[in-house]
Length: 389
Length: 213
Image (spheres, rainbow over the protein chains, first blue to last red):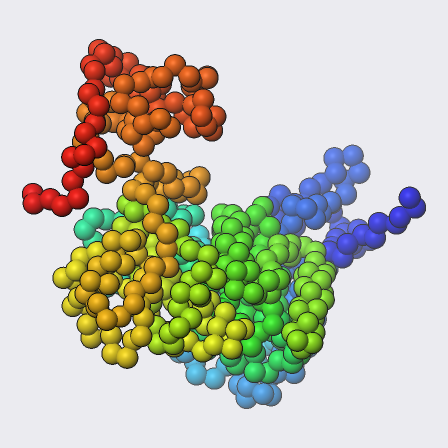
């Protein structure tokens, strides 16, 4: 056995040559993934503990940390390219975790024309990007972070608050006015239609945060301060009485036929947790694949999967975070269980091998490609068999 | 609640295949797991997809009923929805299916579920357990709240039989001996003398099928 094991590509790396061992990254990492080697004094990044929030990347004064997701250079290039399209000199940088739709942004910030940029946690945005954006001719920057206790990466939102405060002071001295940067906070939570509730208690049992309870009489009640917007309850409500801010069932249902219409056979529709893999800045380019992001894989709805098949999808892939990486209290494991149940039912009607569930860790970006490739081969076999008939 | 299990989909497909316009009726009552509007919609989508593979086009309407076995409520909710419906596929237990069948004798009503028992859902373990046989002669006051009719494999009214091994039933080692549980429960409550009370054989002939309470 002389097999060489190739090192897997990782989403975030520490370049020792540049590291000044200042330990800022170590003090900011919410997951204790960065340590200092007692003997050598070297800073060590333990990738297995890393959750790829990018906070260390944004804070490193020596630029010793590289990330493959949303790094400063790619973001700047992207902004330069899209700025003329939007014909606006306002930029709105939002965390995916709490980004509302276009109208929602308008309501929050009172701007009707802006360049939208949603990123997985605004805590990963370095000061440099904000300053360069201003230098590029952008007049106002709005930042939308998650409510502090809603932040998926614990420290991303509080850190952004401190950054904006410090930068605004600096910018005022430079003559940019008092509010070149505006920060607001938001979170997306469950909505309940009391008229539809049948008091079954599914939400109360399944909510990972204890935010749901059931009163008799009175039906389901939600403590919105405790709700963290995973959408798990929405997926298990037998009465379709629940929905999630900005992830409304209808909105996803509209998206499905649109995406499938622009795809080429064999068509694979991916439903993925927005934290399992960070979507490319420019959207998907493969004509056989389109993705719909979800706040957590546990939000994946049997309706939407079946709608995808009804609209001509050849395969549906569900991408979830491994249980230990799940930012929603291990909700992704529940998703796996439900998808297995749906697979059994699909098998019964002759839709074998058309639905696949996989765990993908964002720290290893190649994992998704592998899963997708493998699934595509299976789907191609299914499609050619169907044509042969 | 009434525990039901979805029938294999090919059996459901077989039963609905002579019809095209089908109403799928969920039940928000006691069916467990819940078979409400979501289940009705998901089933309609699955059957529609299955139909396409078999060159058969179904037209489904979906609805849900508060309690399908309540003939008054079901009649008023269903009547306005029955126009053009050739068959009803019911997600309720057998009682719900029969209620609709009685209300609309001209229309075939087909069950989508197999009804198993009156039971409880152990959500943590994801299992459903029979807890009441509706025997019509409740003994729970004498047995510490543990039913020997459903939980003893032999349904003994005067246990234990003596065949238990380490607290497990000799007929099914996965099952706790109900009489050992009863003994421990009564002991805990200081009511162990109850175990000596002889419970007479049940009169199966007298099991009621119609009651006027």
